[in-house]
Amino acid sequence: MNILVPDKPELYFLIIAGSAGVTGIVLWADAVRWARALLTLLLAEVGADIGWLAPYLWHWNLSPITTMICGVAAGIFLGALLFRPIQALLLAGFLALLSAGSLACDYGAFHSPPEFKPVATAHADSVVEIKSLAAEVSVLPPVESSIKSICGYAQNQMEKLTAIQRSEVYALGVGVFLIVLLLGLLFVHVASMIGGAWLGAIFMVWSGCIFLQYFRPSAFTWVIQHNLTTWAMIVLAVSGMAIQSHTILEKQKKSDDKKKKKSAKKSEDKA
Image (cartoon, rainbow, N blue to C red; front, side, top):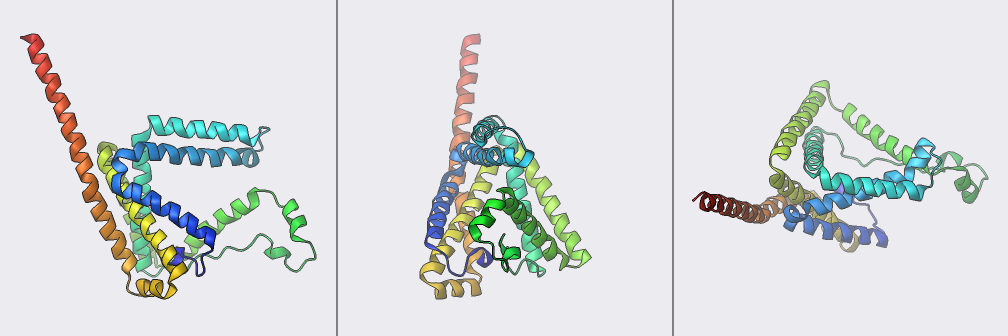
């Protein structure tokens, strides 16, 4: 968690952390009830981002506003009709990355944050001003360079491990992905509960770390030294699942009552 917290967070970063914390509380407390709406909102946001970049990526002769609207519509459509498989895929991928990343971290990888080189680094010694440089650089190179930096960082970190350690990490990730995907497709409410509780716990802990680093850096250092972020995420996730299980039991009870009423009505009609 400490590699995700900047040494000196800016004020705008507190706004992002606060928004993430509020989202985490909603996910942690009642993701079962709001899972479809939240996932649809997330897909609409992703669709808007992809739609905005689509004309630059594939050189379409279309307005970014038009493709953005189409992306939002596609995200809403997918969230409304394909909620169960998409939720299962996202949860399986999330837990697979979390478990495999934790094992790789125990083996010695991902202990240092990635280094992102500024776009203008190669032109630092030139006399070209930043404004003229920004006019020459398109929207996509920074996006592409960021993606390449993240992929290169992950690859370099995995190369630190031995072949046996890498195979164990990959096997754990694939195994967790397949198991969680199957369970997520069969038990949609349980998948919402697990995913919401864990994501909510991660968002809340990360938000708390940002605020702690901004106001009390010494306290944040003490928390990291004692590995309290991991324990906080585990405790919050387990308690969130316990709280949301009550919602699942209520839904199951209502479903059973409806089935009993239907069967009773059918028996009355036959009589």
